[in-house]
Length: 363
Ligand SMILES: Cc1ncc(COP(=O)(O)O)c(C=O)c1O
Image (cartoon, rainbow, N blue to C red):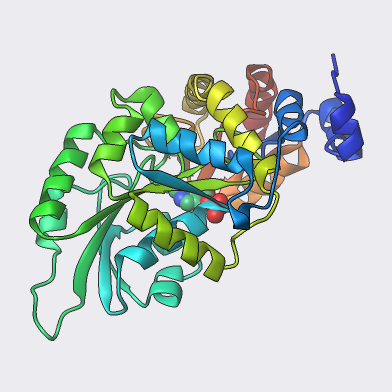
């Protein structure tokens, strides 16, 4: 049943903890970032041709960047270490200190990037009370500041698709088109935090090219649903990517033989995009389990791989998280009485029975 590769034993990804996980079946639903590379992905990484990427000499990084740019029909793309860096570099390029970004109140760029908007770019955020993380074109229009000496300069709109805090919700292309139109008419840049864009594409009827055409910049994470150990990509026109390269260096994110990591990205794009549907199916199975439990107050609509639900007051969130943890099931507390579970490559449908059993035993 356990099929470890030589590479995994060699590089230590198989260790006592991994073996223990198999024996007692640890179920980690805290995030889709917790996955370990598969043996096949490790094999691709192991075989990667590499060079010094700061000299542009890493063939595998170059291959990944060309592949992504083509996929989105944009001039170029840039491999960076994290989604946070991808967003922060993009926003830095599109803005000047004293500017303002329009985004949803739940946006990752505002809530979870360490105050980077002010720290890195010296800008403020106009937060929109959107619908499960999604804003509308009319919200954008209503929140553009007048051009005068008193107001921050509205210069950029940032969307998140799927929305993390919004429970994995996805934009319809028609709304993005309307927002794009408002941005064009008002001289605003449009950025996409597409950390989980491929999850949205798996359920909506649009393509990477549609997305490339509608945004000035896109960041995508390879290390979430796609299952690589490290890495994100920024996509844009040549001038933008030239600047991004400078900021990546300045932010300390330029790497040397990064091709080992880029190889994981190439492997993931070729092999892990289609399978995201499986994560979405597993998420629906979890929703079905949650619906049968009488201590759940509310479940957010689930479109992709993120499940957010609210516990009734008689089951305290910390008690719920700790009790499950004792049974080898890890979930995230996500706000008062709110719990988040995220399905991913290392969550298998055979884990559903144990999950249901332990959830039933909570109260
Ligand atoms: C929507 C969204 N954007 C950006 C990020 C940042 O990615 P990273 O953890 O690689 O910095 C995350 C991480 O969870 C995310 O959920």
